[in-house]
Image 1 (spheres, rainbow, N blue to C red):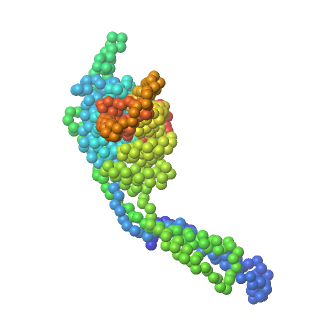
Image 2 (image 1 turned 90 degrees about the vertical axis):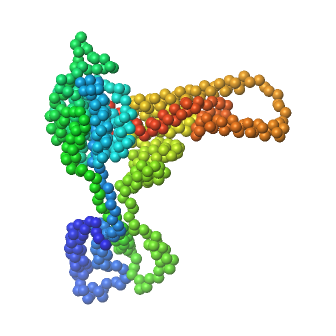
Image 3 (image 1 turned 135 degrees about the vertical axis):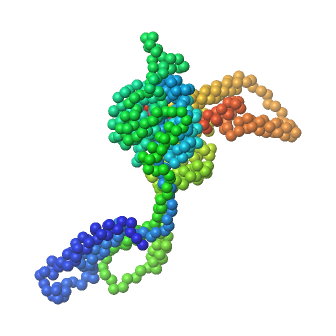
Amino acid sequence: MSFLHPEFLYLMLPPVLVLFYFILTQKEPTEQLFDSKVYTRLRVNERRLTLRQRNAIYLLISMLLIVAMAQPVIEERTVKVRMSDPTLMVALDISASMHAKDIYPSRLAVARAKLLRFLDIASHERVGVLAFGKDVYVLSPPSSDRQSVRKMVEGFAPDAYAEEGTDIMALLAAADRVMRPERERTMLLMTDGGDDRNLKAAAEFAKTHRIRLFILGTATPQGAPLIVKGEPVRRHGVLIETALNPALPELAEATGGFYLTVSTGTSDISELLGHIRVVQQRTQRGEKEVKQYGQLYILPLGLALFLLLLATSSISKRETVAVPPALIMALLCGLGSVSLRAEPFDFELLQEAKNYYHQGDYSRAANAFYRYATRKGNDPRALYDSAHALYRQGKYEPAIVLWSSIHTKERLLQFAALHNLGNAHAMIGGEEHLNAAIKAYGRALHLQNDPQTRENLEIVRGRMMRLMRAKRSGKREAATMPNMQKKPARTGAQAVSATAQAAKQKARGEAKAPGRPSETDSGAKTHMSDYEARQWMKLLQKRSGTHLYKITQKQAKGAGSVAPW
């Protein structure tokens, strides 16, 4: 047996012993008036605990509580835990000036190729990607899954987000919130620097928030004409040109980073990664040993509570005490059922959930994420991950319950939960769920004006309009249908034939839209075409979880406790 916090024994036990020594050695007030022998004869024999006896019990209680605070344990086993990889954010400039062609084929195309190459060689880092111009977009949160991050970068269409202006201050504010849990904050910046030649405020912000910048200057000092929508920009007949910002090397040096101008080949990216690893001092992933203990503090704590009850009670001392056998059996059964085995550590449970998810075991992943969430007081991020694992299994209704229960001040997390809540409702279909999907998308757009959410909302609205038109058409046909005379009963052969024909029609209907629940009432019979159903399912499944989260300039500058998950 050992103690996890032996300092309590060293610091608290000696003063307590000294204090109770003076308490136990002092005489009672009545003993000061009589001789000890006379006082013993005069004292009434009550067979109760004396003051000295109670103080002795209090001393024992204090010692047991100090032992419990020292946390006695029994070592059970030692496990190896992989240390977390260093985190690195890469920021890609997508402003209008990056379309200049002083670097073939363009600055943005070269920077994008350099980013993809960086993902190939950065095998020991957790990499996240930001895109910025006037606003900031999260392409991917920090992740060790290179393929997922690469697909996000390859599928990103920067032309849809191209904006005039390069706001480095907004980028740093957003990066500070994204990397808030990280102790070492490192960012690789691929940009031409914009037109602002005074970057002292950005350097001060980066130093204050411990952000180290490594910059790849993606432009030439000579510059090139500014191109917007494929055409050079002219103002008052003068051709506007944009060049590399000369203040970028000073910005990198002021934050403790490194600056390099883009070059042909991959030597520039490899050199930057080498400097990053030297500064981070973590070139390889390591493992550390973590000991698991069986906790024993409950034993001295329970005994102390029992003695406290004994000392504060007025039970007299008896010559003999008869204890019922049933009470003894109940105590033995209770002690036998007490487990002293420690619960798994929280980080182990979370890592177990992530491993299940990456292995495709979504059922166990959902269960593990949910256990972690309940242990952390319904942690919204763990609830989100549990719902996402349920969604991947096609269990849309339980996912709806979890996503609906997420209420957090983290704006990005709340937006993503509402977006995916709308997807889950839409996947179930039906008038009720389509209305719920429209409401969820609307609430998500109220938090953040996102093009993918708006596109999903328009798809669901269109489906809802077709459903309502079909219902109205069905009601009009029923109202105009003339009263038919009752037909004679069918023969047995006719009934069998009709049943077989209905079964074939039902089978054909199910083959047209497999797994697609009916979205019409009994009086409204409408079906999507095969192509439309495939597109519908593909859109919703594609946009659940892999989503662009936009951080506006106003949000980035107004500091809050927002941290992507």
